[in-house]
Length: 423
Image (cartoon, rainbow, N blue to C red; front, side, top):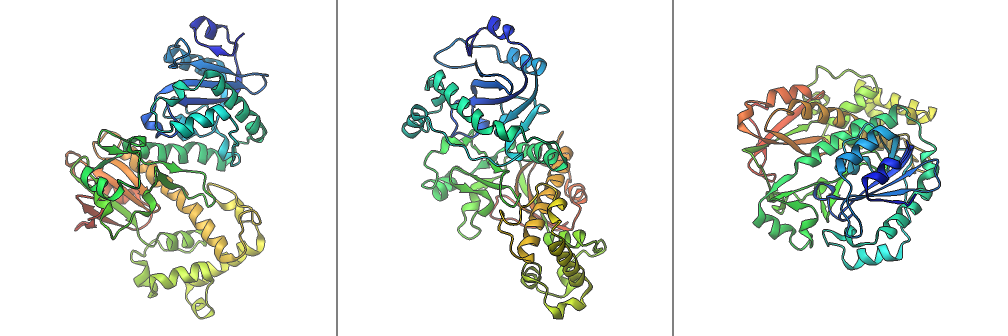
């Protein structure tokens, strides 16, 4: 059988493929996946000597019916190993089958394909670029990638950390990306016009689409795409005015003293009755973080909070067991360069920050599921809602969903958010 599958009778001849490596090839890899349509699908059974290309919309082939392809994948495959589950979910809803290889072990691919590299260097913003690259070159590329990842796939183990990353973490940030953020076109052009040369890569219909990278060293997702870092937007040059509500206003929920509360939770120190942490502790915010990440000064050990954190940090540092305690990844002391108890605690807290933020995102997304308001951005420990007045007063409900103390800000753009009276 040929490797190019372009007719239904060819698809019908394929046997049950079992566990496979699969990649959904959109129109152009440089575009945000939300703004792409499918061109081809590469699929390679793990136990087979070759893969197949399923043709959907390419200039060299006939086109299969996409629903027939999805039906075939549902009925004739088992686990489907993918390079990036969050991206794959934009093209196909068989999320329960998808297993993200990067959550088994981070991979660095070597794309040594002269033809492929030529097209992307010369026509990188052509919206249908992958439809122009010969099918044989796509096949060659993903055969090569398969050879690079097959050893990683064979290490697959569905433990609690993998299950959390592959399911809850991935779906939480995919749900946010789907919504996009409305733009003030004039302000955006003023502040980002030169920074983002090819706006079409992630802007359509007056909205910009963010992209969360889930494969960071610390386990805390970053959010950068097309030269805009949404996790580090400047608060002083008015560039944040570029982002405006599609509905009536922005409502931002922001955890207060999030890391100190997380540290207390890890150390089994009860802060449940403390609503203003820094006032209760009577220590400046900057000094608290200095103590957490630089080591607790002896003079502060008299305070029960600092004493509890110090005892916990010393125990974990000496026992070398903290990797088993993280929620979304295990750390390797030597590989990750963890050479002090302060750095250890920093990595650990960022991992737990991600875990609890994902739980919060999931609860907020579920709460807003049948409402017009949407969660459109999260930045570390804050959550931005594009609020529609038809949904009534959602502030108290969402604040209740958040496990730790938080403050609420409102505003007509992302730059001018002020504390709400009912915060």
